[in-house]
Image (tube, rainbow, N blue to C red):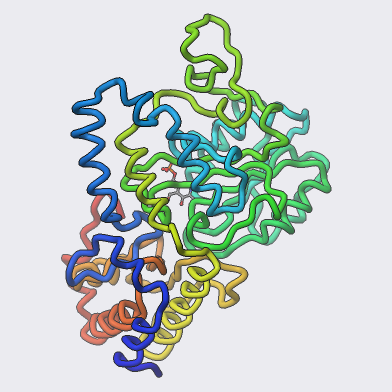
Length: 406
Ligand SMILES: Cc1ncc(COP(=O)(O)O)c(C=O)c1O
């Protein structure tokens, strides 16, 4: 098994190591939750300062034109497009993932009179909740199938297939090209939630034939707490979809102030209201923190970090059962384990400076973010976990206290 010195040597030889300096990482903390809230890019601190003092403070409302505020949704969308294998005009930044799911489900539902919206049981709950509301409004039937049966359930009744590409808990990954092709062959559209994929796994939406997608800005894209989300619509579909939320920013001429609604051409019609510029600026810094790093190298490092994590846990913490797939092609960039005291273990780890998270009922989850995480981090994290398990310290009642956010 690897030693600490060997882990350090791996970090020294790692060509991605310099990217770590782009982030503010608190001393003594091993941050394994970048799949939930990405670390703070140092550039975001300076950018926020300039945004507040110069752009908002001095330039005031003129900044919409003079500082490119009004183009921010398209400009940042194009930068995200480069990370996910889409054309620059196919991605736009707007709203939250939940709201974007609603917009695309309702818009897509109107394209055919097929009755079924098909999704996976155990999908991220916001996807299921939004799908149930959208189904009720559009008259669709919400069909929720166990993961193993989803593909077989695609058929002539399927209007839209809604799937999360990388599962938030287990990290299981769907075969985007295969599933999309299967749905297409049956005459159905597919909407992918890329919240745990964008900036985490190599994506090629155009190559894989993806039609619709949404994703979070605050996870691997490092856009800051509650960062705006993105949505993707394949070029060929854009002008066929009518947005259900018809805000002025998605109008063909927002500043004509007309009473009638005319959707903007292309992806712009999926904007709703005024972009939140402080948050947009932070997201732009987050997306720019990928500049110069290609997704294949990041993915190769994610795979190496995963293997190291899994092997160390297998060797030193056998009471934890890994639930993430061993095959890299079938998973995302986090690793999850089952343990009956997962919540308490997670809290004990946080108290010892190792931040992961807990997912009900019994999963402890660790995000592997190759931009700013190293081999030594993984080594030390597992060492601290072993110490907590050995001493049984996780059973301390103070670790059982649950906050609103777990
Ligand atoms: C798969 C998935 N979709 C959506 C969300 C959250 O959406 P929102 O940003 O609208 O809260 C999450 C958050 O963890 C997620 O994991």
